[in-house]
Length: 207
Image 1: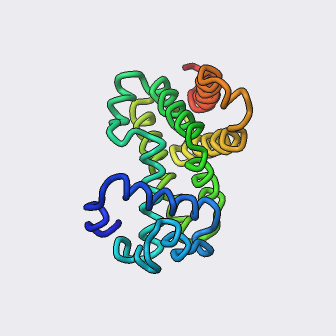
Image 2: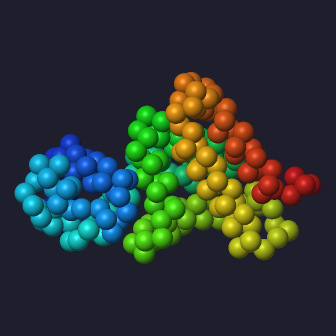
Image 3: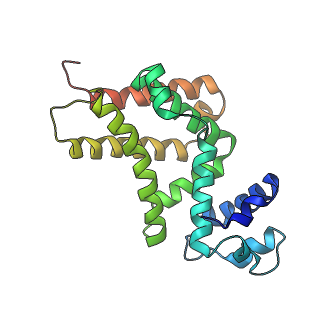
């Protein structure tokens, strides 16, 4: 977590620093990312980032939180959405929101994709954070029997998570294709079909 003094900065200044750091972490692994490059590009003196962040890991985690917050609405109560829309329809809305935001700002998804494929220990901790966000949504559906109950819960989550990751990776690597970037209606339809595919795998035949 950034030092409190970072949050006393003007919001635009905060976002400027985080976006510069995001570009660095999207292009380079945690180990190869440079605090000096980030400071210089952000218009700060060498090492000045340590005034706002305790170390590079702290900055990376702040960037991860910034990216996840940019892909979703931080003010959105996910459980309220799933309750209001229904579990699978709510997930459709979440997926569409994530990728429509990603279409508008592709570096967000580029960062997530690189982190999810990384073997760096710090970035693996980031993977765990992303995984836990999916687990929370999965458990919400499982507890309400929106997800099949005839297989071990841990097994079902691994299947669910693998499908989500594969859909995410395909979407992230095809954002420039007309079917995705050319028309939000096309993107919405694609998200609905992708979630429908996952739904069919995660619900029992009798459902």
